[in-house]
Image 1 (tube, rainbow, N blue to C red):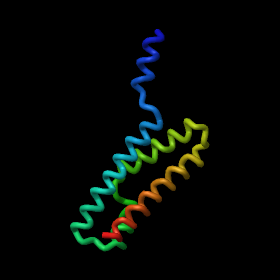
Image 2 (spheres, helix red, strand yellow; image 1 turned 120 degrees about the vertical axis):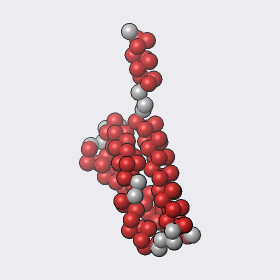
Image 3 (cartoon, rainbow, N blue to C red; image 1 turned 135 degrees about the vertical axis):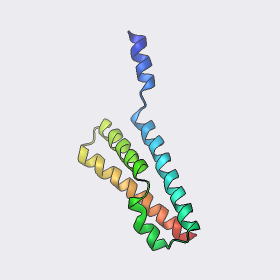
Length: 102
C-alpha cells in the first residue's frame, strides 16, 4: 500500500514543476510569435497591441499552473489570480520591449 502511494506521488507533477513547464511553453510561444512578426515587419505598436491575443493555450496553461501553485501555498483564489495575471503582464511587457529593440 505504501509503495502504491509513493509511486502515485512520484507520478503526480508538483505545482512548481507545472509552473516551470507551462512557463517554458508560454515563453517559447511568445518567442516564435516575436520572430514571426519581426520577419513580417510588424510595427512595435501592432505587436504590443496583439500580445494579449497571442499564445492563448499556453498562456491559459501558465495562468492555471500559477494559480494552482499559489493556492497550494495557501493564497486565496483572488490573490493567486492577481499574481498570475501580473506575471503574464510582465512577460508581455518584456517581449514588447525586446521587440522594440530589434
